[in-house]
Length: 451
Image 1 (cartoon, rainbow, N blue to C red):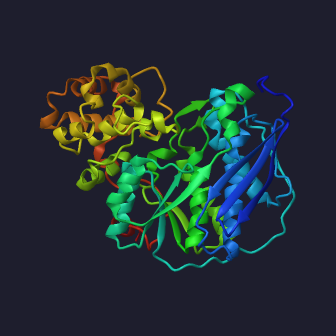
Image 2: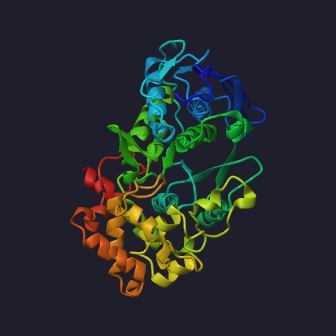
């Protein structure tokens, strides 16, 4: 444990409150002499009288604490007056250990001995939340993954609604512009983190990555119950489950809260609490990033508006870009994974003169994505090395890419080293592994394979 605040022996869950008339949910925690409150503004017109609504808020309360726990990384998590079952405490232990593995790695911490304690809850049956089927709520980030999910659900005739979380009084154009193209209704929820966490350097807090997708998923569950939706449909694909690196025999995964392990664990918690009336699953779980890119290439209506660049989501609006930066890991990966399937001129136009594959100075960054550099895979939401290598070979074989010098050089590097064999593209363009998609939402090719 670092010497930042040895007095922080515990992290405490202080409680949550719900104001049905305004739709505000407040979650309060404390550690190291500081108190933190996270606030959400949900739809006050939602069905707050349904006991499932408070049960969903309670789940959100349990997960949202992770953003404040990291300030001191106390060895004990005290749930205060919140009763939980042994299963729920075990779930939280796994959530903190897995979701904060990158945080622990970067801060040289060992969270393997983390303890979660609190009063025991009385055994109770699931609430039996039972909405009408066929009304999924889709957390939507505006990237190719969530776009492909929405297109698939629309093709199957689902009555889908998008779900977007934004800071109070602020919305990300990179999400809103793409959401408008879908033509679907959007449920907006504002999330206000406690301003104290932005003073980490001043107050001596630890800092680092948290499993934010898990918190967004939990907030989507609340919105789903309030709106009578029967599913929270995520857009996390197969390689999100693969660790970024191994450290001292333990996996460290930047995308842990997008992994199958978290999805399954969270799904069990939801079923035990609310019943089987609402499903939480990823529509893309058995798909590779290569398959997603292939599908997205056919959705031309989105090509001119989508923007997955990290700089489009900077918290400070003054620093937020309205275009692709063309140099970050995410820009490089999106360019690489789409290059096999999109016309070269059209893809260059997407980046408006800043296409990463046209920039020789980015060779080291691509080398990391392709496993050709000594650095580890970047701590970003990008595909695995095998997917990237398959993409480089497919893209380099396109006639309209014959003169893209960096691409051709990278192809030679991948092909010339026996230890860098790519995944076979054909194996990445068919369903891979298990999934939890209910039959009512499964696309035809998964139903065919299941029977």
